[in-house]
Length: 224
Image (cartoon, rainbow, N blue to C red; front, side):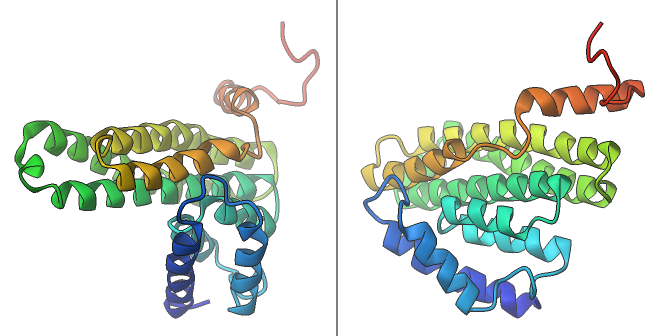
């Protein structure tokens, strides 16, 4: 899929967001959204490049995180890729929360001239850039389906999970007095927390830690 294909996903994401208006849970919209993506050619057969898959997932997440998580699971060829896809969706949700917060604050007049919002946005921007760089780097290292590859993917997964929550939470704080903005960011928070990771946080930390110490994760006994 070319960059034009990512544009198709972006157009659909706009529609997904509009249809989600007024609903906390995406519910049956996920099935409909996945069908729309399939009809538009956004499938595992057409989106074969890893970087493009992650970009598509970030793009779709802006419209409906629940749909993006489901798509990421469908596109993943193994556990390492599933972890990377999950992290990409979390990044996409954080990016959308940031964009919504910035736009709503801009519309609030002199609020944007105050130091608090400016400092908060600066921290969010730094987090997003760091998340993007780490995801790209770890995706290049998480090659294959062995324990080492999974540990590399989990390094990104652990960091992005925490940072995405921090960004969406900060975005919500920025628009707390804005009902429309708070509702949209509330949807993003719901999606962020409603979909379990392919590898639990505890197991991810174990895999990353054992990889650092050179311990085989399949070794028994598991702990001393």
